[in-house]
Length: 273
Image 1 (cartoon, helix red, strand yellow):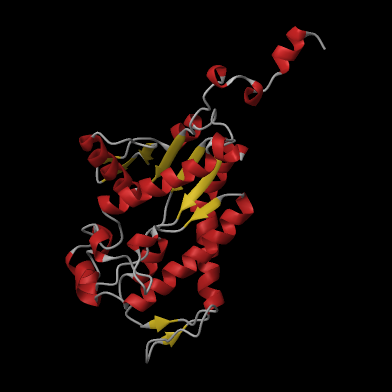
Image 2 (tube, rainbow, N blue to C red; image 1 turned 45 degrees about the horizontal axis):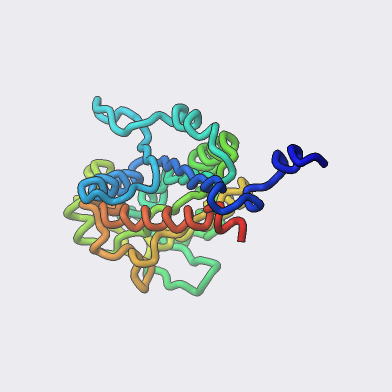
């Protein structure tokens, strides 16, 4: 091999320290629906303080009650991530509120279900629904909805893809009664809020189905930040947004820190070790 060929084939690690090309930091693109709003708020806070922003965040662009909400269509986001490489990162916060749709409002016919993970208590006098029936409903619904979005994201890019689970339910029924989304405005005053225990069961059921779907797609799952979850599994009050289901900007800040951790895992320096 000639000296010229040797120079051409030299790896970056073989070059003198002063001439090595600095590894490129991972590019990060985040996309979600309403749960991504907490991250966008946290980014605004960081910008105001002159702090670093580890990602580009996008909220699904749609029209609600004649008003355009969000920043980016799903199709546009897929285009954005096409040229990302294996060192880059795509963060999904798509969907996430199915558990709340089923469990926030107290059903006129009280119902409950046992879970296979543990001998959880059920509400006295409630109609018991077999767990497999409820799980099947979620499995079919999620595969037709969020599962298809996740599949499209995974197919669109060579980047590492992670899906962040939505925040767990809020345990404070009074908060939900006072601050709730318009979705619940019609029935909540008459029927009231379901028990926190039932809401947590539905969230855990959704988590289990999403874990299975993401495993099949080769997508990593990231749990809600530990600091934001109490010992019983509910969202801590200091991370409540003024509604029934979402986290506030402090929760979004914890998501940003999770992303920074993931970036450190994906860094070229760490991969080379």
